[in-house]
Image 1: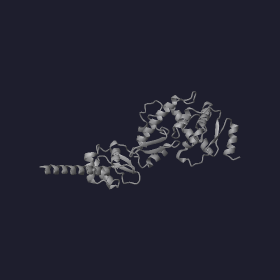
Image 2: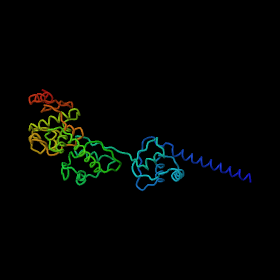
Image 3: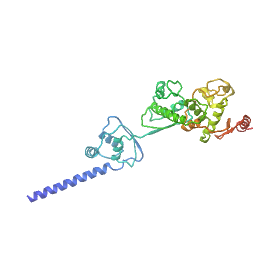
Image 4: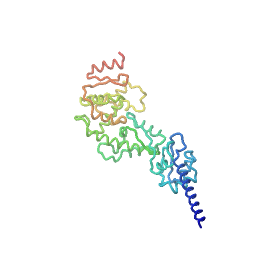
Length: 339
C-alpha cells in the first residue's frame, strides 16, 4: 500500500512537472519576438478566426509557433480571441501575445494623406486617387454628398463649384477608407474652423460672409508661400476692397483661364473679362480658387494693419510692399523688369 501511494505521488509529481514545463514552453513560444526584421503590414479579412490568423502569420513567416501550440494557447491561455478585421502594423519587438492584443482591440494602423493648401480640388483628387490605401469613389454625386447637410447657412448645400470647400490638412485613415469619407471630414473641419474664426474676426472687414473669407483665404494661399507674409498680403487686399480698388491678382486670372493656361499670362488674359479676372471685375471672384489652410483663413479674418496697397514678387519667394503707385512701379522695375 505504501509503495502504491509513493508511486501515485511520484506520478502526480511527474505529471505536474510535465504540465508546468509544457505551460512554460508554450508561454515562451508565444511571448518570443515575431520573426520579422522590419515593420510589416498584416491584414485580417472579415470572418477570420484566431486559429486561421496564427496559421496565416506562420505562413507569412511572421511567427514560428506551431499549429498544435497555437491551438493549445488559443483554447486555454489566450483569453480574448475575437480578432477584428483590418490592417495592422506589426513591429519586430512584438510577440504573438502582443499581436493578438492589437488584433482583438482593433488597433488598426492609421495611414495619412496630406491635402496641401494652395492646390485645387482637381489636384487633390489626383492625390487621393494615387494613394494606394484609399478607395477612390469620387464622382459628381459623391462630391455633392461630401458638402450636403452641413447645417450652416453660409456654406454649401446645392453648390455646383466645390473649390475651397475643404480644409487643407493631413488626414489619418484606415486602409480602404473611401475618398469621399476623407473629403466629408475635410469639409466638416472647414465649416467648424471657419465658423469659429469668423466669430473672432477683426472689425470692419469688407467681407459679408464666412464664404467670402474662404475666397480671400484661397487668394492669399496662391499669392505667397511665405507664412510670415500671409497677414500682410491679407491687409493689402482688405485695403483695396475698402478703397473700391480692383484686386488685380494674377492667380484669379489664371484660375479663370483654366486648362487653357500654358504658364504665360499675357495682356490679353488680363483684359479678357471672366468672373475670375480681378483686373476687370471689382471685389472678390465668385468662388475660392484653391484650397485654404487654417493659417490663411485666420489671415483673411485677422489681417495686418497696413497702409500698403500694392505688392510685387521679389523673385526669392517674398514680396515688396508699397503704399503708393509710384513706389510700386519702381519696385516692379527693380524686381520684375530688372531696370
